[in-house]
Length: 448
Image (cartoon, rainbow, N blue to C red):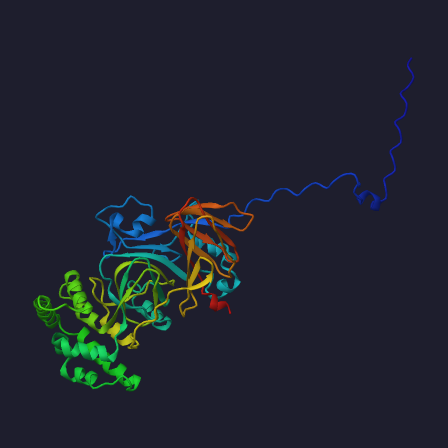
């Protein structure tokens, strides 16, 4: 019979708690698990608007930026980058609406923007390709926008104001604001067709005004004269335009027509028998060179005429129209809402804020625009700002990188990127050509 097995050895007594918690000096602690890379830089798909006044086919910068195979007969008028429901942007990778994502990720807006603008992007960024004149129009202030939206929501689709700024990419022609009293007096003297529609009484009041007369008196007389013109009967307007065009065609054979006279002939070819052809004579005729910009406040008359531009505005699509359009005209509202200020608009040329970056800062809190030209071999670093940004690449090929934890994103013409608040962005080129971008963000002055 075999001997029984020996008893098991006694269990060792546990170490004191303090000793058990102490790591051994000869063993290195395990490294933390790798963190997933953050997607700070996200590509956007932008909406294209096919308004009738847009350039057609691949003649349109909008069509080229949208990377579409353009229909040569179809207008490509505007590229929208933002959250407005009439043309919302979506993320390219998963198709989610930018506005829906921001509602779930308000930290991307930054606390100040999220608190002030209700968790939404306060600006709408655009590219415009204009072949024929847009309507003579104005955008209501916030109070009037709320009233108009409540009365006619199918026409005035939101309750926000719409200050805006246009930066010329090509030569960009605009009607903007009322001309000076001296220029208006010259129109009444030399264009009898307009003087006849305004009427002798109102024309006489304007003719008697001086530049130094009280502002309210001048504005009252200008409002009365402009309203008479805009509300003249269709037959009277048709007859006046016919006479004016005939006279200018005859006079063009013996003298050089003025810029405004040539503009009248051009507008009449686009919009026959439209009172806007005559109303154009009341406004400043502005020709922006590439890189120049102007801004337009609430209740100021204007009409874009031709060219291509970058545009930024408060998030709204409210437009009150009264001429040069087949769309709904709200002449009474337009004539009553205008400020009737006179004088040439301020032209912005951008202020350098760092090498290769110029900033256009309008007097509106919702937006500013940076123009960035990245030379070959250079690294341009856009410092973090307390608002989100949208970048669009206009020309060239390069890379965008959002802080050191993110992979760089290749960038080419037409690429659009959303960047959350407080994110540093590094811009660099690939190859021997410069890369041109624009950035839209909330006006930096609004955080001071």
